[in-house]
Image (cartoon, rainbow, N blue to C red; front, side):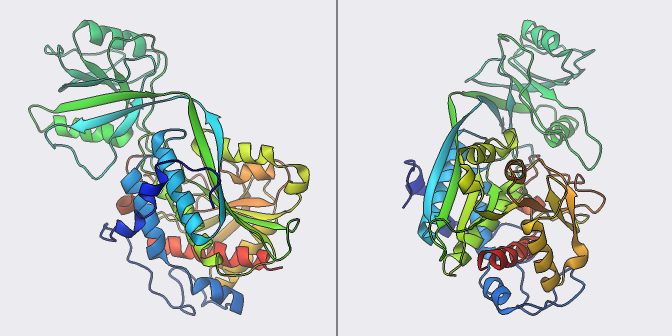
Length: 464
């Protein structure tokens, strides 16, 4: 029933079935019963029959299978690139299979410049992502190989004697970048890897596409903080570290929102309840928690709700290009006529709902306006029934996810997320990094609780 699909979808429709659950996880598969005390909850649940209908059908194992496809088989899903399209086609195929009227909603996005680091001799850890950003002003669509040479700080480089034919690394600053790259090229370097400044814990710098260069004759890439650390640690213990770097330009890009709909008993003009997440990721990040977790929560709830009648029309939406500034959800909202906007009862946006980071003990109810609405109220009620009321904080004023696009036009919406208890800005160290993997940054217990909270809340609104 998909209205717009790509050729790559068919090859991914069965991918989840072929993925095993052998990936090492930080938490075991949740094994509690419907009436059991949940991990971290202060009270035993007091569920009504509608909650039980939802909770009894949810499976974090099924959600994990989807997450393995998105985060491990596909990997980083950069807005508008082929990897993001593969993910969109996979998600749409699953929603098709659940019986939803599914469509891809295309929109244009900016060019992307990517790089891939290959460890020629297998000296670097392989349990993180080695994608990086490429400088649009450097040499693109090329592959170079050479030993790594460390020049120290780009502001005052100490040039090794054997730069010719090497890949030079240096601590980056934007002001020193053009002169450093030009000097590296003049000394015969075949490529440059720029290293970011370390951020203050728990933040870690992300990979980046270095700006400010024009027609550099060699490829120039920007890596993440963890990649920088691992490269320098390897250089400290080996006599030679040969790497291969490949750069690629991606132009004329189209990103997609994926939307599945099932009409409710109230009919064509009846109310709408939406559950959503964003399926893209940043450069260099497999996006297991951000926001593979919100994506698979949405997909698993779509499966469960596919067999439950509701008064409201249900929409399950996965947004493209959120990481570039909420582009997908803002495009979608802009296409909605006012009579369509007026039909929305609540939008439940889920962004980073499964981190295994120990301090992330607070489930934040984040509202762009800071005010309560139907989405926050219903999740608060679900938290009380599930025994999690003390861990729910909010509504707290915060945008920076796709709920903002809806609240900007007056639609009741909120973002829901596990984060540190200090503030909603207190995010886990793997955030936007190559370590945002299933093994390093996903708790199936937190994912299960998140699915229960949103599922019970959405049903409470949709059945009215």
